[in-house]
Amino acid sequence: MSAKTGLGRGLGSLIPQDFDAGALIEQGERIEQIAVAKLEPNPDQPRTIFDEVALKELADSIAHYGIMQPLVVSPHGGGYSIIAGERRWRAAQLAKLKTVPAVVRTIKQLERLELALVENVQRVDLSPLEQAVSIARLHEQFNLSYGAIAQRLGKAETTLSNIVRLLQLPQKARDALAEGSITEGHARQILALKDMPEKQDELLALITMHAWNVRQAERYVTSLKAGFRDKTAATARVALETPETERLSKRYNTPIKIHRMAKGGRLEITFNSDDDLQRLLTELER
Image (cartoon, rainbow, N blue to C red; front, side, top):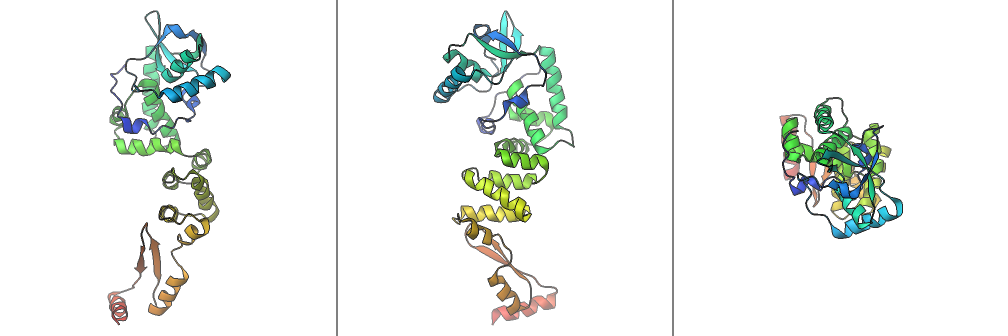
């Protein structure tokens, strides 16, 4: 298997803790119960620091409900090396479990799956979310840094980070993106409101209800961040045409639109020819 590189901190944090790790396991794979003592961390594991409080919370959950998502391991010496799931393994030890559920994959199987995932991400018909899940699998199951993945795919690291961020979408927005109800551009505007989770569902509803384009969704986000938290006030600022622009349009006999920004905004005045421009300049200079 190819050499692994370390993970830069920034991109690694893009996969949310509540990401459905079930997407990282193939359907129909045999799950075995393996002794905790027979497992050892992968030395190439990119995550080296584990939050003790979060680990204790996971251990408490495991003690009550068990491990819901199997680990992925590979035979190593007389035991197994953990490919994915070290955090669950550590929490299982805190919970005093004797065994954990795991899917055992040989090095050859892992090599084939890694190659298949690289090819999968390169497919032109793959949706953004499907790409994000495949990239997450490459990172989580093969300990590949995002820089290494980007190099293999021939993509910029920033492109990969934008794709992986889609996994942070609320479930409703993920479903809408998967169904084609919203575009990737819409999804990025919803992600821009991650610090206002209650507004993310609100924006999704407005996009689908009013068939907003990405620019309109962007203006709504800008309005919220400018302090217009009331839905009615923020929605009003999305409009390109307002009573004020209508008055100006009549006054200067040309279409005038408003574009809101975080602070203030700009007016867009349309002219049809150089003569029309000169007319408008004369009017404005009076």
